[in-house]
Length: 190
Image (cartoon, rainbow, N blue to C red; front, side):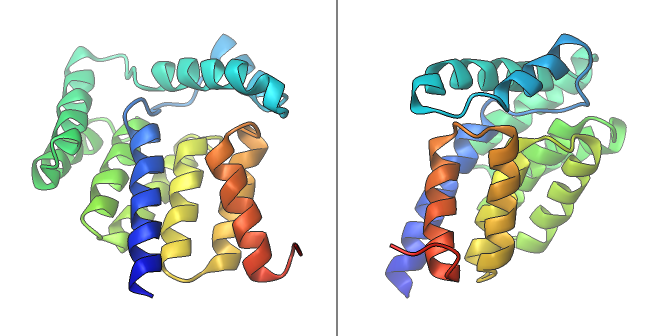
């Protein structure tokens, strides 16, 4: 059991760090919305490089709040997460969510910091807010799956990962999680 938890936490941190270092923030408009639509059509291994490029572009757009001050708070929060200083990250990101409550990336980054401190209830609450603001936030959906799996809710985790795959079907970590959870829940056999 301990080995599974250590492995799950390591996988979780890896996936969250991938999404956290370039993650989203506000409801996309115009051509960014078209990028999300295009991302959902890329499903094969041959599409993986283009899907990764599109995902990175979407994530880059999601990190811009429209306010240099709010963007600075976001960067400081991300830097603190990268440095492992989660209390400082949470302080910066709480200031961000207080001053820009409609900027989904502040909530997403704070959810990551809460997760890394094993404060799962607070992380889940922030993920809920992210998904209210940006319903196609594939990083928040994957984060939700990671937390639910860690809490033992394999069916809930599977639904979260499947939702992420609807938006970003070529993401290999999400596909791997779906396959693993389908086997655990009996929805897929060997």
